[in-house]
Structures are given as structure tokens and as C-alpha cells.
Length: 256
Image 1 (cartoon, rainbow, N blue to C red):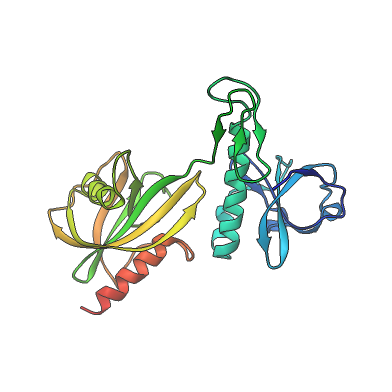
Image 2 (cartoon, one colour):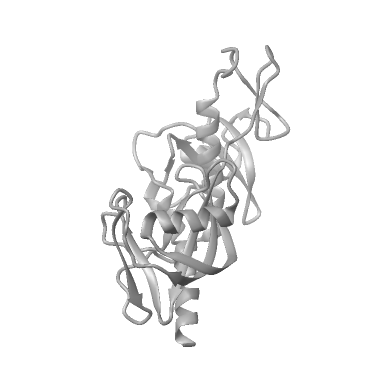
């Protein structure tokens, strides 16, 4: 985890990131030697391994080809997870240059992902925001919504952040009621996915419709409705937990 100045001979995968963007020359994550990508002289730290080679993080903004890590999400889930780690760490180190308690300059721990204050001895770790996402089935239909932040026509399942003092299950029931006005039952856990936009951990569930009529929250949603499993609108791409929940709900609908 120790940061070092690149001589140019180092090789591996290069995550060059700042302000939640990552450098993707030619649309892919660069690999090879530091010299090959003109990265010598930059400060870098190893943050993991991919395909047998070191993954390096450089906190820097290149003059071109800075993109959202979403571009990697549809190509390889594990690589996306590694890039997400780099993007989140880069933002963590950028936002923790000074101690929030005493204002003194921070130092990076050499043994863990943490920033240390040598003045007041406070220790900071990257913050992860837990969130829930749930696929809801009603007979052979699935509840899909178009979110205000998705202006590209994509319809997806309901999601939201967990509040202080709340269990994951309580968050699901609350978010579903707030966003759609319905009640659910038979809630069960499916899987989780790190989601670096900017620092979420998505926790996926499936549930069955219980009661109520859809009355969507116009602040959060453009629309929400029941869709028959074989007549769905545009949905999220592969390698997202939203897509997995939709596909698993569709599989259950086919059994009806």
C-alpha cells in the first residue's frame, strides 16, 4: 500500500483517477509499463491484482479520455469492481487532505486504507453508503420505474439509501412505500454489488407484492408500473445487480 514515485519500469494495470472519473485511453483501462503510458514521475500505489499483474492507482487528471467507470461495468464485473475501488480511494484521499477535527495535514497509512492525523491521532477510513435495491413480483408482472436521474428511457427496480438506525430489511419496506405506495412481503436477500457512484454498496433483494395501488413519488420517479415479464421496456445492462434482480424476477414469473 506504500506510495512510490514511478521510475517507468513498473508494469501492471493503471487506474488514473480524480473526481470520480478514470482515464480510459482508447476506451479501455491501460496496461503495460509506466513508460509506455508516459506515467513515469507520478506517485502511485498498488491497490490489488488483476490477471496476475499489479493494479496501480495514480491520483491525477489527464488532459483527455477521462470517463465514467460505468464504461467498464458492461465488460467485466470483476474489473469494474477493481476500478471502482481505485476511483473511490482516489476520491477518499482527495477529500481527506486535512483532519476534520483539528485541521492539520493528514498522512496516508502504509498498512490499510486510512488517513492518519499525527496531531490529534484521529484515524479516517473510506466511507461506504449502504443502499438497497429490490425486484418486486406480482403474479406474472414486475414493478419497474423510470427514475428522475435516468433520462435515457431506462426502467429499473426500486432502490434507495439505508437511513441511520435502520436495518436493511426496514429500508426496503420504507423505500418501496415511499416511492411506490405499495406494501411487500416475502422479502429475501439475493446478492450485493459495490457501486462507486460515488461510494455505495448495493444490497439486492427480491419480494412479492402484498397490497396497495401504485402511487409513485414524482420527486424520485418519472413513472412506475407493473410490466408483464415478456413485455419489458428498456432495462439496465448486464453485470449490474439491477439486471440480475430483473432476470431472477422474470424467471419466477415464467413459473406462474
